[in-house]
Length: 210
Image (cartoon, rainbow, N blue to C red; front, side, top):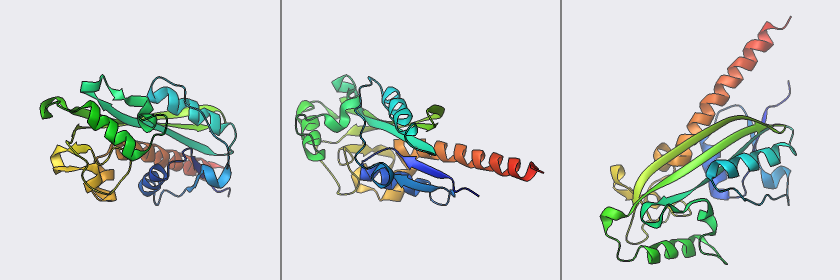
């Protein structure tokens, strides 16, 4: 039987780590871009998370013989008209980094009271195969922007994103706790449920063959 393989179409090691953990025990061989398509990159041009995730998924699925899962995600802050949005990873251009991005957010929110620092993380995942979109999944989580970075776990804007039900920023949570409530964890669970159902359907069809 041919091994079922899934390509995670991202070069972000934090995202790869979180998605791999969410798909543990799924029965798929999960690979990253660096393993199977080294040096190949895609330039994001979409205006929404869905546009970017869809374009990335199709681009890599045409170059990979197997399932391809791409995602686009980011932070939307109400007081900044939903910025940084799709440019979350590049917010502090021309030399963005997690630290510089966080500093820019805090600078733009200087003097904004706690009640107006509402934000949400959004994640859109798109599953494709051989140049055809199979299914789209979305997850989001709401919180507020803290007055200063807190915690050393996670990546990106995690030190600033305060999640009230747990009274911690995402960077203060363990990886398992973050996955249970995060935008990426929620999208990944929807994706996993679909892949499990897809796998069961394949098994039924194999058993039905003469």
